[in-house]
Image (cartoon, rainbow, N blue to C red; front, top):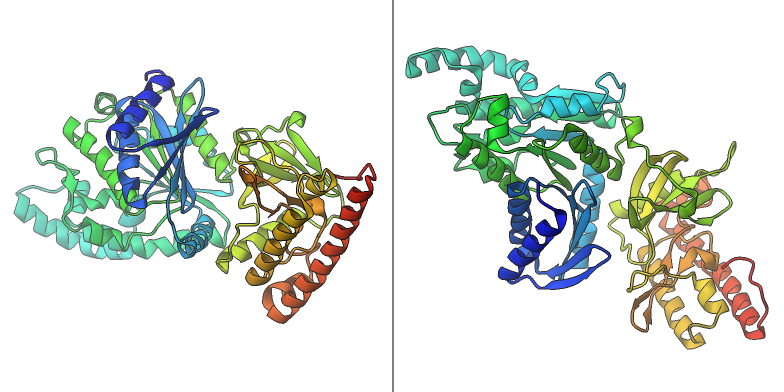
Amino acid sequence: MSDINSLIQKILSSLGKKGFSLCKYEDKVISYKIKEEKLKLFLKIIFRLCSKNSFCFSIFREEYDKIEVVLYSKSEDRKIDIFLENIEEKTILEYRKKVLKYKKYKIFPIIGPDGVGKTTLFTNTFDKNEKNLMYKRFKKIVRRSVIYNIVYPINKFLLKKKLGKKPEKDQHDDIHYLLVILAGLFYYPYLLFSSIIRDKTVFVDRFFNDYLLENISFLNKKTRLRKRWKNLLKYIPTVYWTIHLDAKPKIILQRKEELKKRDIKKYRKSNFKIYLEKPSIVYSYINTGLDLEYCQEILLKNAQKIGVTLSDKFICKINDDLLIAKGGERACYIHPEDNTKVIKILYTQGIHNNQNRLEYIYMNYLKKKEKNLSHLTNCYGFIKTDKGEGLVFDRVLNYDKTPAKSFRYMVANKILSLEEQKILINELKEYLEKNQILFVDTSLTNIFCPEIKKGKYKLIIVDGIGAKRMGIKFWFYQKSKIYTKYKIKRQWAKFMQMYKKDVKRAALGQRPFTRL
């Protein structure tokens, strides 16, 4: 593996040759703005250079119009942010709903050729006896199914006549791939049941992907994608996280001589091609030719980022220096591994309103209803930390990446004129009414005012949405439009009273404000 800086230069050079113009490169984060139709080419370049130079990387696409690529190295990780231009709001909202749906299905396939080290990496990273974990081998799922066991003896008899010898089971499955896919689809509802109802995290060794390839079990034939692979892909379930394990052909062949060198390369490229055609929300490419401990670290980082916790190794370490705010129930910390995110953690003991659970439920409700979240901080789900379970949100930053101030701070220090404040307030009021979003804890400190470009500001609500506590009222807020409209109007009147008091206090030069 070469130096990360060398890899970055190769990527920038290759992207430049293909007509991609660098948008920004600061704080070790590279940014590009591209057209959607060029995304596949962009990702192919990253895949080709990372696989060629034995680097691991991940693709995160929680938002349709923003793709985050993380390049891993032993010294430091680097990030490439890809922003898609001119994406319709409807597409963004529909995609958020899709992300929410697949995030509930904690079914994560681990793909890779025989000998790549799937079992080794998994068993050394996770405790297979963990009660919330299921580990399934796709081959066993298929071969134990009723439909497979009825049809297999017939196919085996016919194949023996055709080949002149008894076929291996892998060869049978290669030829009769439709039977395998069908058996897998019949079993898939049980995996969904285990994930959703029994609250299991399901890892699947191999997946349907292998059966979109032909000749994978015949050394005398070249491995390739089937002619109808795109049609078959339509019936294969979408997953939230795909883990693609790979290594140099020489390393794989030393472990297991199941494929030829050319077929290992084809397997690698074909699986990424499958991903591009039907992408999972998260894709992790891990080169198992590297140290096992290093591969484990990357796997754990990815799991932690998407909120999968099955081991103490996952627990996010929170330093008190990361604390940025503290409310009546929760403390807010900068995410130790991503300073564009914050983690809200309950610190009160005993009876509390559990604002994290309430906010998580309400944010998911808004996403399901395809509401516009442009004046809210996006929620990414729960994460385990050494201070307890936390909820991850976007951090509100100015266009120059500096931390934004609260709206109360802006009012108190007269940074915005009264006319500018009025425009921003009217925009927020119209937004809340149009999208039927409840802002119940109407403190001005719960609204931040980032400078989104030079001289242009926007109000973002960071706390206090949905309800103050669980109960029948919260249920009515989600079910009754009339009640919701009434509540929005009532809370807005309270907000305006608070705002007018703060404006008056600022005009009189009264200090200090209790909270800014």
